[in-house]
Amino acid sequence: MFEKIDIKNLSFKPFELIGTEWMLITAGNLQNHNTMTASWGGVGIMWNNPVITTYIRPQRYTKEFIDKEKYFTVSFYDNEFKPALQICGTKSGREINKTKETGLIPKMFGESVAFEQAKLVIVCEKQYVQEISPQGFLDSNIINTSYPNKDFHFMYISKIIETYIKK
Image 1 (cartoon, rainbow, N blue to C red):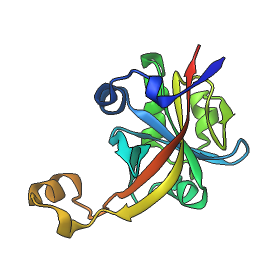
Image 2 (image 1 turned 180 degrees about the vertical axis):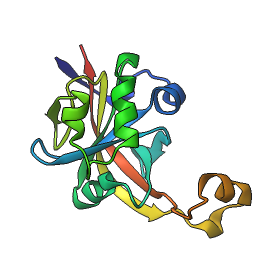
Image 3 (image 1 turned 90 degrees about the vertical axis):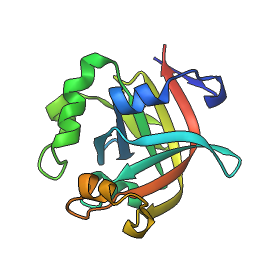
Image 4 (image 1 turned 180 degrees about the horizontal axis):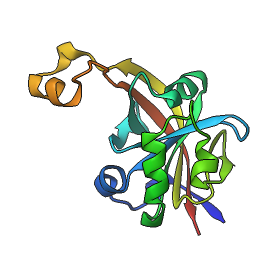
């Protein structure tokens, strides 16, 4: 059972949730969706709204779903689901059915899909997208270490529409 709460009333540690526990970025509907694991992102205020910033490499299958849809979710899980998140981060939805492979159960949250096993689901509405430009880097070591294949992430800044926590 999930409870819808105002993001302003949510107390969480974004560095731990995103960077250590990871998140799933998911777009689509119950019948046709894809998800991927991410450990880069941020939350804050932009354009007078609560936002989440996500980063997706161009070759990721989930990017096709994100680009096609207006809404997507980011969701967070207890540590016991780390093996499922590992699969979602290393296997492509073009080659496997991630829900069958992981046992994650898709569920609609607002206008998009996430999974019943989540402890926190954030529904996002895309507001801005841009490919990260190599010209913007002030430290070329970042390009050498994070982008040896020059596959620069696309940055999505998205308005937080709804937030759900597991009861």
